[in-house]
Length: 252
Image 1 (tube, rainbow, N blue to C red):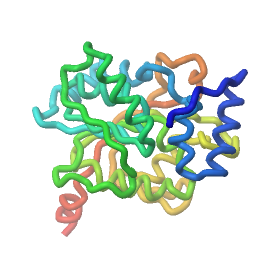
Image 2: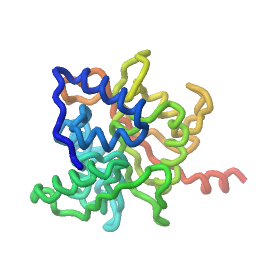
Image 3: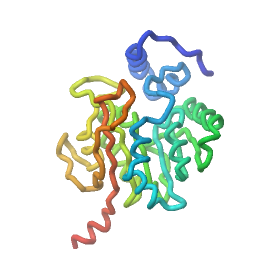
Image 4: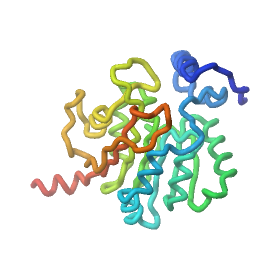
């Protein structure tokens, strides 16, 4: 049963409470957080860097080569703002979350957003690491506040899973946040582009990833527009999935 939202004086108080809850309840805490309204990552809209990218020449080029049946995935979709946005761009989109409460809220948001209803969109409660990957895989995956929510020991499995999910030639968009340097603890854990790179390229130790092993980095920028608490703490990085089999056959 959904609980009435708790009240906190500051965002930091919410984060402290969330961390304690995760320590006590494990992965179940994410659903409790949505039930109790402890969602400091939810800003009620898509992030400005994503919209800016889509409306840029690079983003328009990506959309221009999209097939009619292109599929997109947004793991950790929360209330579904980003998933709804990709659906409105013509992607058959799956918004996925471990929290069934988040998924119910996402369905409510979708039902109340007629201006976004120009695409195919579904929301499902599922485990990112365990659900069955479609045979055709995904043309596009978007990660924002999902990687940073994972404990560091799940970063390598996250990277391996992304390699399973995105088809060769497909795109992974990562809004890398929060870049907080040596700050310890989480979630959200402090991340940076190198940590994402190591996870994606299969590096065993920090900085050991082989460039271009599984992905080509096609864009790495500091966003021109960020929400106030994100300024100086995020980068937008776009990756293209390489066709490893083609690479291997070319080296024979």
